[in-house]
Image (cartoon, rainbow, N blue to C red; front, top):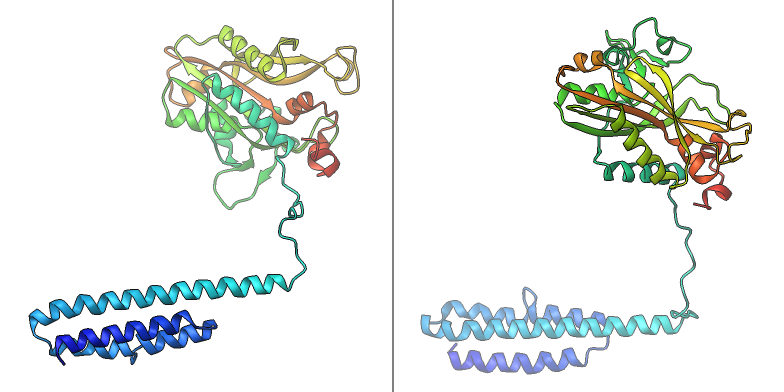
Length: 348
């Protein structure tokens, strides 16, 4: 075969299959034409087999010509396929009594749980105060949950009436953490001051379920350790936090208290929003609701974690997310958060 004969056959194949593809009536006809032109034994495939017998100069002219024809036929087949597929779809839709301009049926959307909303608001405020997120295990050894936090063996918090003990087969005595303070001991053990962390998470106490208590609830631990940190720093930051969370008009009081891991210690109360301080069953007639415990980190805790209390000091606080959420959302029973009543959840 000469180069001129090759060119002539290419032109014939192009005319023949271009016309046939253009007049194809359905997708099956298009597929038959693809096989006839470009299949293993197709007209163009058979023609290209002759290239092996051409001289080098003739191959340089014939090769691109054959490839261009293959590309053109492939494009024509694809365009025809798309056109016929669209026509078939339109015909199918025309046979269905369906108005595509109508809006879709509404699909119920999920919502954030009130506790998630409350926790995010709290952590957002703390992050603006410079606290970064830290986490720790739910199942904890007594060393990090009690010992390193200066909670002695005789302390009532270690009594089985308050703590869930866990049998793990480990030589260590394990508990479900009773507070997120275990994050405090673990973090200080691995990091050196200055430290400013918040530790949100789930905690467990062997408490009876009532309007203000639950055996499973959520806390946010805060810890700040640096040089010359004192009670004034604690009061400043917690006041900013509570007013940022509950409003500038929120009335707050700091009440002396005792915690083994802080000295001095203070509890922070907020005037009851349910009775405006007049006294109700939620505040147990006092007009105030305890929100969190706090204080200056005890020197023994710093020592236990490898931090020199002669150089560094710090403050810590722990707050219940549920109690603060009750104040924020005007919910007077902690059990409401766990009953999954859609009438309540859909309000948030």
